Length: 289
Length: 237
Image (cartoon, rainbow over the protein chains, first blue to last red):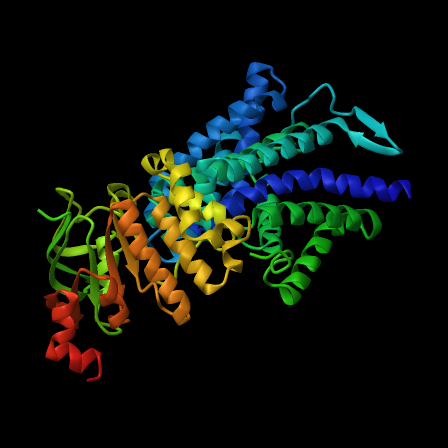
């Protein structure tokens, strides 16, 4: 029984990171109607920036959360304004090729700058953990989860209780009506994209103390983010959070009880089953919307 | 000079021109109706007025400011608000949030509490259902919400695109009553687009008839109802 709770806990802890990255993806999809295939790569860039800043300044990565968030909000805004925005009125293939191209560009860029080597950051609490009720909580994973939870709560408050957040949700639900309310859609696109990119980067940041950093690290996370978003229902923030935790648990349970190297198989098996039986997403239709 | 003056306006989609050379005007506190059958170009015309379509040529002057070429958000800010056909509510959000979104812009936001009180006095049903999702309302209530949301924008000119479409006769009466009440209490001008000719002319001060993308007739309700062409084409007499 102890192993079981440990497995579930591990799943939930990593699920927090998935939730952050995927929430960013679903926000971008909801407002801009663009599938950002570079989401995992923005996460990877977030990891590198965190790594360099932490080494350079000698500061714990989790204390850099605010700084990294600000850097990537600015970066995301520029990418939207100068690249994504130019393709919004074009067919979906154009946006797809643009974000796919960006993904390859960022991976290659980091390969040129840093080489293909796996890098890691040594934090003093790397191997420390907390024992609660027979379940071992590794410090870095616990901190990563806490940052993720705080970030998601802040996002939730922002989207639901501020004028700007409400306007973003309105644009996501009905962009034509939003424009009629005087909501400037270009401004909404910029904000939603930069917040989405910031979430990817900070999701990456939370991984740095216990995960290797390398140019291709974002590939799997980007893919998982897509799985999470589709499971949760496209554009649905709450759905993304729930399905991220679910994916974390499925991955962890498959690794523990089936085989360690088959953890991805479990995730994609569930994904395919959901696509066949509930293509509208796990939560859609259960809530009135 | 009138509050809103449209001069020789042409508009359409891509290379296709749908509205040709339309000229009309609306005075302060006036209710003007655009009449015409399905496909006459009424919706294209007013979607152009609120900035959802590009102006091909011509001018639109509102309160002395030229609006052609401005986008929908800028035109909303200038004080023209559309209640769109099909209502276009934020279906997954509550009634109250829909109304708040109507007063998103700074000007209307400063009057939010007063506007909300007025909307609730106009449509008490909306107050009862303020926490309900907009998508769960009945058709009539959704139309009331769409009008209420537009009133929250504190417009100088309220444009309604076929507000009676798909509603039961009793609800249509309520909607037209509320239009008169809004004009009277808010002292604003109203541009109404309708197929329901008799109903529309019963509340309007003036009307224009649109056929094949052109404005072919203008007059007060009496003149229009007495016009031989209108009688033949729209009243089946």
